[in-house]
Each structure stands twice: as C-alpha cells, then as structure tokens.
Length: 380
Ligand code: PLP
Image (spheres, rainbow, N blue to C red):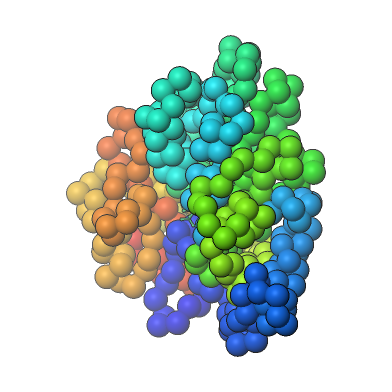
C-alpha cells in the first residue's frame, strides 16, 4: 500500500517510485554528479554509469546500446520518431489508428499542418479497439509505393487492448514499411524483443514502471536514424542535446531490470486481483460492463468498466476520490480536468455510459479491491 492509506488504482497514469530505485537515484546524485561530457574523473565516472545504464536497457529489449537514446519520456520518444520519419526518412504515408495516445495523434496533426503532402491513413479498429489486420494490409498494399510508416501502440492506455505487434511487424516488413510501436504502457510488463519483432522505433517512460518521472528512452533501430528534435551540445550521439540525466537513466535501467526479474510474480498477483475485481463486480454490480473479461487481449494491469448510465455514475470518480480511492475517468489533461476520452468516444459513439479505468500495481491487495467494490456500490 502506498503511504496515507488511500487506495491507488491509477497505475496506468503513473506508478509510485520503488524505494530501491530511489536509492539508486540518490546514490547517483551524491556520487555521480559530474557532467558526462567532462573529461576529468568526475565526468568520466558519470559517463561510465550512463553507458552502463544504456547497455542494461539494450540488453533487456535485445537492442544494441547504440540504438537506445535517453529522452525525457514517452512523448519525446514518440514525437522524435514520427517527425523524424517524415522529415528525414522520406516517409510519404503514415498508417495508424484513431485510438493512439495524444503524443502520437497530436504530432500527426502537426505533421499534417507542416507536411500537407504526407498522407495519414486510419486503420479500422474493432469494438474493443484492436486494429483490423486485414485493413492494415489493404492500406499497406494501397500505399506501398514510396516510404510508409505504421504507428500502432502495443497496449491502449485507456482500454488495455493489446495489439499483435509481431503480426504488424511482419506485415510492415513484407511491404517494406517502417513500424513505430508506442510501448509506453507495456515496457517492463511484457517481454519486448526488438531482435525478433520488426520494430524500427519504440519508446518508454520510467514512471510507468516504478521509476522516476522525466526520464524515458527511444529505441531507434540502426537502420532508420532520424535527426534530433533539439540542437545543442550534441549529447546522446547528437540525437538529444542537453546535459544527460545520469541519475534518471540509472534509475530507469534499474527499474526495468527489476520489472524483468519480478515480472511473472507481479503479473500473477495483478491478474488474480483483476479476476477478483471482475467476479465481485458481476456479483454486486451486474449492471456494470467490463470491456475485457480476461487478459487474453488486454493488458493485465488495466480494467475498463462501463458504469450503468445514471447521473450518479458521472460523479463516480470524484466520489471515489472523496472516499480515498484514486481511479481514472478519462484521459488526464494538463489542466487537471478530465476530458471525455477520445478512445471511448470512438469505440462506441452512442454510448451513454461513463467509463472508469482501474489500473493495478503489485502493491494493491484483495482488501483494497473489496473496499473499491464497497465504495463504488455506495456511489452508484
Ligand atoms: N504513450 C502512451 C500509451 C501513454 O500511456 C503515455 C502516458 O500516459 C505516453 C505515451 C506519454 O508518456 P509521458 O507522459 O511519460 O511522456
């Protein structure tokens, strides 16, 4: 349980910092404060630690260290890949879905405004938000001339719906297209092997896997190098100028290694909690609809629930918050206001129901789920 006894069920938004990760960070801040670009011993030590972190990340996703670029997070990784692919790799067509994260969709809006000749093509999605692989293939066939980029997320952050990235990679490969896969919600939670999957770009944010905010990475295959978004001192082999966040990179690498070590144990615990939630909802609140009954095609940490269409449901997130339970009711907006989710809007435009997203961590307990069920029953 996280401090203050409140119940935190919004782990897809962000996760609490693992105390061991914090220790790695504070040790680094104390002892490795040198600038990695400096040639003296303080700088060299910081540089060595940074490169070790890069190797550790690369090893986990089976990339070469030169293909890992530390960034401020997933948004920067997605933006760098998409803009770079158009600007530097001569991409003429982008195939994606309308359910991507705003860090993809808003970059695509920008690309449309600045590069009007680039075609943006929307692959159809099914009732749960999974892309239609046959429509993707049609689009690849249709726009196979010239360079094409497919951008599809591994797991949707609101519904948890998983895409078959192996299948997409193979399709892209057979049409000579590039594949950008937003892995921000899955990095650490699922094994990702870029030596097997035909992925050219993907990204991660450490705060989604119990690491700190403000650090992430872009995986960019050596075969598809783009130019940077920022220019300056030429750090990160010219890809990302700005003095490196050594403590952040070390913390990210440590957190990712720990995710890998603990993955199966945590996964079993979270999956059991998810099953318990769904069983309890069926028993106590049968009018709730659960988007994914099981985790075959859904990220195990996410459960999206459509509440019964009543005025009380509209205020569910606020009333749960008053009861000390944090869940999400749409996409968080920088102003702190919750917007109606573009994802739910697209999946079911007629839907009158309010959806809430429960997202678990290994810290959650069955008792917490029981308390959530009690409170949501009261609220509704
Ligand atoms: N992509 C997905 C699927 C996400 O869920 C998020 C964050 O919620 C991002 C990208 C952006 O990550 P960050 O806000 O850490 O830059």
